[in-house]
Structures are given as C-alpha cells and as structure tokens.
Image (cartoon, rainbow over all chains, first blue to last red; front, side, top):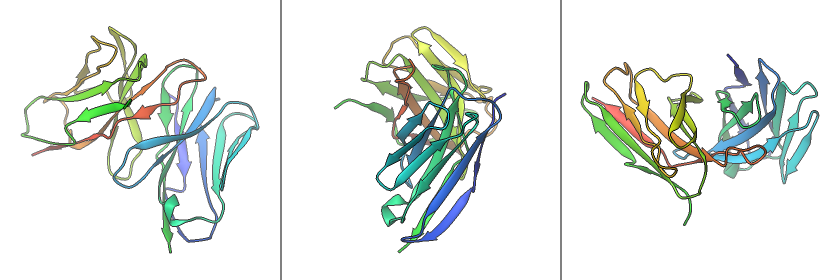
Length: 111
Length: 114
C-alpha cells in the first residue's frame, strides 16, 4: 500500500532559526495536504497542494510540491514559539479518496 | 457553532470490555474518518465512510467496528479483540469531494484500558 515518509522526526531550533520538514510518498499523489497539531491538541489543516512544482506561501511558511508529485516540503522562516507543534503531511493517491499521513515532525522552539 | 464533537475527552475501561466512542458533526459533511494516534507517531486510519450506510476499512481495522446510520454520526466501537486499545482516537470529517477534501478534526478521545 501507499506509504508516506516524513523527516526529520524531531527538530529543536532556537527562536529565529529556520525549519524544514520533508515528505516523500511511495506513489504519485493527486494532492498533498499539511496539518499542524499543537501539543495536547488535534490536527488543523494548513494547506493543500495540487499542481506539479506548486509553491504556496502563508506568511513565514512556504510549501512546495515536487515536480513528480511524490514529495513535498514545509519551510518556516525565522521560527517563533508559536510555531511549536507537530507538522504532518498527508497524501491522497486518488482525488476524493482517503489520506495517508506521514509520521510527523515534532518542532520545539527555544526562546 | 459548527464543528465536530467527540465525547468523552478521557475514557477508562477495563480490559475485555467493549467501548464506543462518539463522533458527531454538524458541518453537513459526507465523509467521516477515524484515526488512531500513539505517542510520537502519526495518524493511522481505522475506518472511513464516504456516504451514509457505507464504510471501508482503513489500515488498522482489526478489533474495531463502526456504523454510519446518520450523516452526522460515526461512532467507533473498540472491541475486546483489539490487543492494544490504549491510544488517542481522532475523528474527522470532510466534504469528500476534490478539491474540497481538507479534513476537520474533533478534539479527540484519550482511551485508557486498565
């Protein structure tokens, strides 16, 4: 079955440093979504990428979808303590079907 | 206030007992999902339903059962056959049609089997 791998599993940064998490799928994806889960909370949708090579920005967050639609990345510029949490990618093989989640990257930010 | 509700937030059960977790949504979403999350791990799909009266097994359905008799409700039963049921259970819903298929999650139920 489809597998989605995410690295690194943990990342500790000083406030102000940049952060990147990478996501790789074993199969070509229809689209990829990113979610953030704060400690003790539930996942919250951040963004969906659909097109090959797509790049989207949300303030300090930059999301990319690979040309082959098998990998994606999330980059945070100048991290803040409010960025703390676990970031998950989730891929969909066929539009409208189930999502397969990566294992997540847990980000801690030291003030 | 629209959203997804899961109750209770914390649940304790004795080993060998079946337990049913509640999930209700008032977002008028067609699709609903159940995930299990273990410490330091991602979300694993248990069951999902794309329409009333129909549901499919996810990646870890053994020891679980669901029903979808109403659009708003998708209860999950953790049976005594589930060998390691202690976990954080998350319910989600979505419109279910691309490109409007982002998933909205409930607050979760933390189940502890003693």
